[in-house]
Each structure stands twice: as structure tokens, then as C-alpha cells.
Image (cartoon, rainbow, N blue to C red):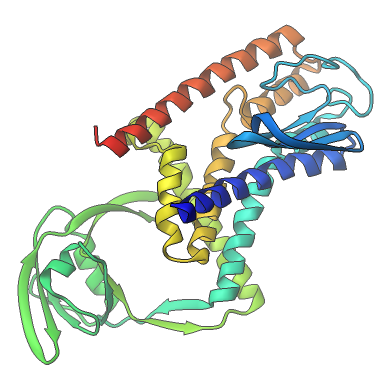
Length: 357
């Protein structure tokens, strides 16, 4: 239990710190005054003022915030909102404002890239051997019930002989809802049985497609990763999970995916606890994935999100004059209402999963 709590604090804490550090760094680089840098939401637990900034750790570990002079955020503080002093938000040009608002998203993406690259450098490169030899079997999935074991060789699918792992995979993937006949060799004995694959979605090109899976993995060649190879692999993983997140958001918006599948803090806690069983590398991988999720959700043009602030900056740049303070307050109030609705929704989903409603 203690290990699971520690895991979720590392996951959420790492993602939040990366996000808020992005805002903080770009605020400082553009000469904005940072009044508060907080990890967690009030009430604050401990704090220390260094220079013009109060650094604090707060009690609710579901996020954080960077308070810059003149920004109308969730606090609805309008102090210095119209001030043109050089250290205020309003006193900066459009590109400086965009950098500050986008800082959290930029750092979340960079954070994920560094994690994926670092893991590749540490763990090396694993490349599948294109032979139909089974390396491992996922417990509880169809291959496990058939009795397929590590080292077994898949000979045919539905009577079609297979000579490579890739050709075998294509045949299994093409039957997400149909039973298939699998022929395999185990310790010199040939077996042949029918099994129903489980349907799952995987990324093919730029689309999530439903495929059949039986729960087997190929043998892998392992070698150390060179520095630039690790960076390349880190970027490939970053781009892969960005695409997955974009496609998932699109499916939620179009109704192809149910909002009941959205997870919140309890779901993340369960996921972190389960992931922790596989070691610290698995936790880091999860942090990278969640960091990218947070980046893309935050950049959506929704009031109170970073994307909402960014939209206001762009509108003001086009109009060549700022929106009124009252208009910005109203927009933030709408955003707060949206965030509260989303919070209630994901908590309800989490609780429903726990109690299997």
C-alpha cells in the first residue's frame, strides 16, 4: 500500500513539477515577476519566500500553479491586470506571453522525450526476431488457455502456413471477432486448436484500429543503444504517444469513445500501483505517457486551460487591443465551471470502476 502511494506521488508529482517549471522558466526568461510557485493546490503546507517568489508545497496533490503578476487565472485576482509595468504579464509583447503560457506544455513534451530517451539509453534496444517463435505468454489471454509455452513455434493460422512473426501477426490481427485455428509445435509435438482472440485497439498509421490478440510475444534481440540512437528512439516514443492521445481525444469529441473511459486521480493511482510492480523503469515510462496526456489536454482552447489563455492572447493580437478585465474574469469563471464538471465526471468514473457500477 505504501509503495503504491509513493508511486502515485512520484507519477503525479513528476508531471506537475515539469509543467509548472515550464511556466516558471519562461516567466523568468521573459522578465515576468513570479509571485507564487506552488506544487499542489491550497491550503499550503510549507512555504519559503526567496526574492520576489514564494515557493510552496500545498495539500491537494492534483496539480500546481505559477502566479505571475497581472495574469487573471483561477484565483480571479485582477490586481495589476492592466498594468504595463515591464515585470507584469500585460507589459510583455505577444510572443513573450505565448512563451510563458506554452511553457508548461513545452516542458511536459520535453520531459517525456528525456524520459523515453533515458530509458532507451539505460535499457538498450530490443528488436523482435522475425521468426514465429514464442518468447512469452500474457497470463489470462487466449494463448495461455491453449497451453502455448515459451519456446513453442507457431506453424499455421487457419491452415495458412506462417514463416515469420510479422505474417503470423497480420493473420491474427485480421480476426478480432472470429475464432481462429492455431497450429503450433511444442517440444517436438504438434498441436492444433481453435481459440477466440480478444479485440483490442492499436495504432496503425494515424488511426486506432481494432485487431485480434491472443497474448504472445516474439523473441527479442538486445543490444546497447548509442547516444543519438537513444534520442531517436525517445522521439519516436514521444511522437507515438502524442498521436495516441490526439486520436483518443478526437474519438471522445466525436463520440466514438465513451467518456466513461476517462480516468482521474484514483485511476492514475491504481495504474501507478500496478506499474510499480514492474520496477522503476515502468513508472518512468508511465510518467512520460501521462506528461504527454497533460500537455495535449492543457493546450486545448478551453477557458482556464493553457490553450484558453493562448486563444485570448491570439485574439488580442488580432484585435490589437486587450479584452476587458471583466471579460477575462467571465471567461475564467466559465473555465472553472468546466474544470469542476470534468473533475466530478472523472471522479465518478473512477468510483464506478472501483465499485464496478
